Image 1: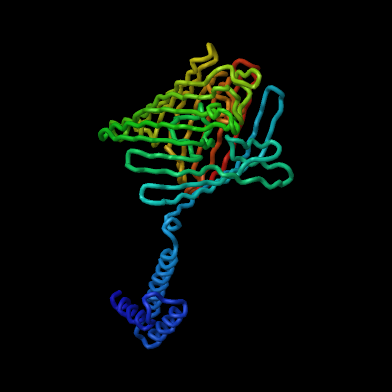
Image 2 (image 1 turned 120 degrees about the vertical axis):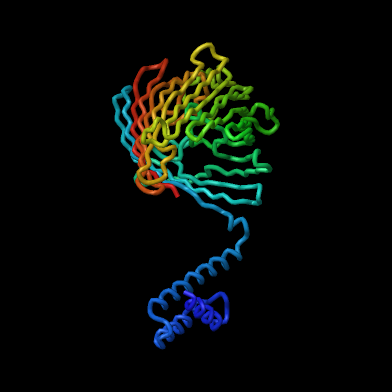
Length: 419
């Protein structure tokens, strides 16, 4: 090896530059071939030397390109995912079956402006045409309209400032910034707009305290010269804690308050059809109390599973006299996250969400159309096929609570790719 390194140094000096051009590399190849002919190097040593020089040349070229780029480009990170779905729906209300194909594609970029500030943005497919959801709760595109082209939308765009390791400030159109153990209240595709503050404090080795404070703008209903206070917005306060007494047990709990400021009681865009509304205005306010928890056991009871956890959620709206509560209870076991081959996870939840417990513009759109006044179960099975590739089966069986008792069943078969 020492002999090879000495010859490499001599060749680099012969080339006349520490960073070789493609022409220089060609000349070096000729010199190495001459050394083989003269018996100074054997063929294996010559091959090793060429590979070392090629590797050094690649590194030098990449470094030269990086040096010519601004810091924000060099710090940029790309990520995304693609989902291919078949969805089968059966509704007993009209004895109609529906089978459809859907895709979802998302691409995001984030970059560090400085050591404390990050800016991120993401694009996503968006449904349009017959039989496609779209709106605020879906980035699915349905196969329809004879291969019609579908739009790409801005999914999120926000700036994040972290002045201290215990404080983070976010502004813009963001991913959901607070914690929810399930999806009783918020569809995971929603990207709220406004500002968020996250405070985290590690009290000791086993206990961490946190508080989320969020202010979201829901609509611009005022016009020039009108009262801006008529614009609906939402304030969320969510304190909580994480407790990890040892490596095998963890518990997370949070409670909070949603303040829905909507003086004119105007209904929201993208809403369902179940909140009590009269003349285009809500009958009730939606200032709600909510809580959530998750109890997890890692490698529980000597069983051959990575994790077993129980989750729960509860919400109460004190304004209506009835149909004003909601709850979710469930378990999951297997790997906490499926990201590699042969990893797996199974989950089961049951929920009930009263007619006026919560705004019908925000719950999971796959659970009886994202409405309130619903109850039912959801079961999910995920299995890793390869690194960042997994198969998921998601089954819903749901029904209305106070309206007709028709049952809706949905089976979604998803092939997921993350990059």
